[in-house]
Image (cartoon, rainbow, N blue to C red; front, top):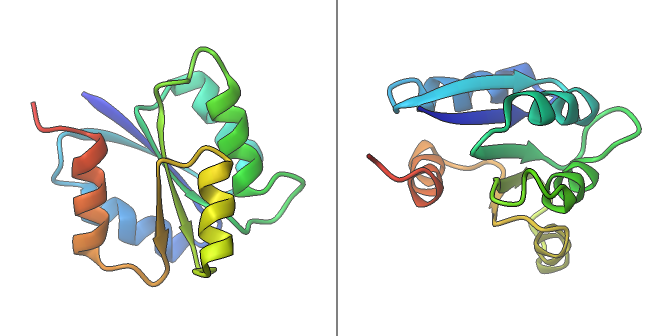
Amino acid sequence: MKKVLIVEDHADIRRLIRMSLEFENCELHEAPDAAVGWEMAREIQPDLVFLDVMMPGELSGLDLCRAIKGNPHMGTVAVVVLSARGSAADQEAGLRAGADAYLVKPFSVMQLLDTFGRFVPVN
């Protein structure tokens, strides 16, 4: 079973993502900020991370993305950035940090499921 980590400081957005994916064949984990997300990523070794950019604390989502992509044990983890910042420069910064995809908030459930399907193929 594929593991998905949701790193998002807004509980309602975490809930939306969880509810959107609950019928998919995956194990869901949640973290309220990037520091906890980093600990959880190292512990559970997810296949996919949905990651907010702007979160409280010392680490941003882009910092966490770089940490995941820079870790030799997590190089195959797909990272999908979720952000209210949708400018071309913001999206470019996310991709430069190593993100595999960038969804602009508010995103639709269909966008989320399509993106999930790109990185977690049906067995």
